[in-house]
Length: 214
Length: 351
Image 1 (cartoon, chains in turn green, blue):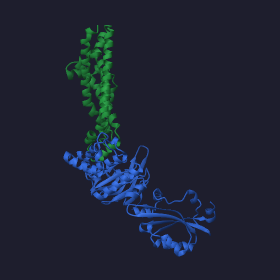
Image 2: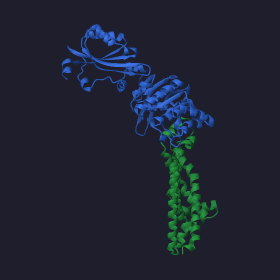
Image 3: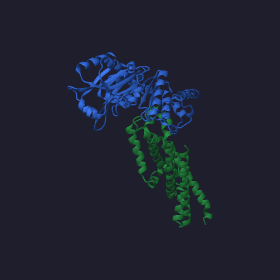
Image 4: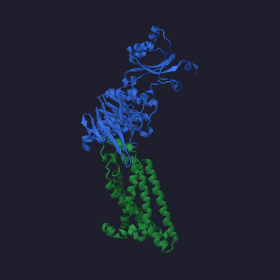
């Protein structure tokens, strides 16, 4: 019976991977600089701006405290504005990215916090600019933690993408709900869960490998 | 050259005000190694961090290489910092960069060409004797090697001034001596002005020309090292000197000292010899002339950077006239004589 649905599962897997990676890409592109800004605006040696830090921190916390399933629905108008539609895989990418950006930003911030303060001081004593300290010292020193943060973000996105599937976002989550839950085709639901488990294991393994190699 | 004048630094926190530095005046002349010694919490680290404005003094002037740092814009300050090298207690090397890349960093910041970076870094690696470790990462290097890399990095931009913040405190005694030797030879070769913060008198003894003793945020003494060892005035200085120049008797003996002589007492004297006097048979000469009986309780000799210094503790029968004669004789020979106390002969011998 599974053989008949193989195409369906492959298609769902590709859609899930697509959603996860596109949104993770935006999480990285926006989350990394945002994490850096969160870090430097709190650091008296670099670019301490308490008011700016408080504002950004507040926004990040607000987005992070909204349950994903609600965020998904709440930003529908914005989704439609950006990608022109509010259903399907492409539409799901917007809320996924929106929730992953602050998540990853906080992980980057904490990774930078782990870099010994002495290195920032050494950079300052050498006459480095704030940007040089970030690029040449902080990010290279925190790169392992940042990679681990990205792994965590990818895995979280796998879970969220399944949730997005539940309300018409496509992917494995959609298949699990439509076939497994609504049509009682238990074996398909189990198959999707197994694929999701393998996917998470694989991401974790890759992330650990990359972090070790750096 | 470094000039600090009237530096004050006060830390304000919610509940307290902490005066870390009080009216500090300190000059490091061109080519000179100035040591600053004090216990932890005395304000040493704050002081050295004020020199390159990692810590901004609450008031006072900081001049380095004839530039008034406190008046610079942040861009000008960064430029000035390129000419002030700094070495830290915990090395502060970048773990993701090799020895070579760590030393290259300050030059990369200045956007030097790769060929120039290579030329400078290789010559520095040679100078600190680490050529074969050029591609090693910090976690494969020993503490002493890490500090050598850090020293080379501090010198990459050819600064005139080097700041050393407890640079040997994380190293074992043997490695400490290697690093101190390196610093001394760099000082001579490059005519660097070096400000060196430490809590170890050993460091001061080995490399400093002059020394400032800091206690509770104030400089209590600032002297040529030989003079400081010869004649320390502040109590804290005496204690610090004791740590390298052991010239105290065991507690038990000292506890029997009294400060006024009684008849038949023994007087205990501490003699300090400096330079040539350490090698001359002065005491022998004195004994031959006066036929006095002297017991030697302790004697030692230490090498300072420029001079030798010796200490001796002796005891002899107290006699006011003889004692003053002896003092005059020894002082004429250039010795310092200090009466440590008097002790009852019977109880002394009964021990």
